[in-house]
Length: 344
Image 1 (cartoon, rainbow, N blue to C red):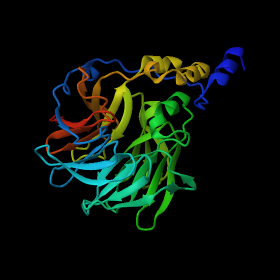
Image 2: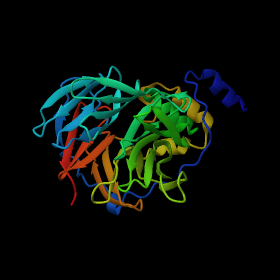
Image 3: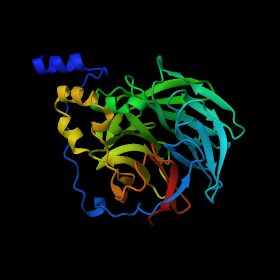
Image 4: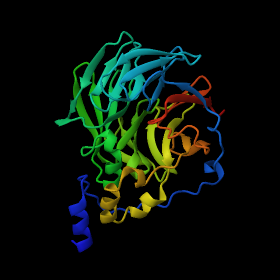
């Protein structure tokens, strides 16, 4: 260890232990990926309390469900009026509408929850495969009720996610839960901050966004390759967050937290510099650009739609859901949900 590295270790207050890696050069922001302002005029529906509606779901009646940083779950009617549903007592992130009208919530502090519109909150899983669920993040639910969900990091909680990205050790997991038995099993591990989850329409595979690697991985659920893990879409133009299951049009929508951050990629080969970056005051650490961005990929992992909001009026976008001609958007830090017309 060099003297410089030794000093950095002594100054470290975060516990980060970075590994060297080389980030691929991001794709050019031209053509389909060029700025287009399509999110700039998004309509907003404010949360009555709290902020950070990190994910959004839409029920059969077209009502939008989300959760904020004060633990509350809200339901917006089609006019944008919000009604409280429940309080998880934690920090709700990913949210899905179940077939019986209840909600599946990934709570960063409490694990996998099931919530009804009477305010009842049931904990379905706090532990998985011998380990506490430290960073429950996002999920998808199969037609049989099986839940596929992410535990983003074994090292850092969701509020400290930036340390996991700087460390790049890949301790995230994709897990499967049977709510009837409470049993969990491991589908993939070693993921770079496992985040959004999406199921194929025929449920033959499940996708998981790896925020720290700018890619989406695929896990086979059926056939001779069942259980195998492969890269489905790589070198994305931005930092992927939540994603949707496959729509009736064959698309997977993905929220991009930010365009790729040049300084973060430049630091990738240098663990010592990333230790120093982790210990800088948060105000001067590498920060995302104020750009709202969602993309849609076809069944082959090819980007076919890109909508950006370059005025930064609604960002970062961390959740996206398509319903009845609209794209509904969520954000980790905004005080509202938003919507724009979906592309045809």
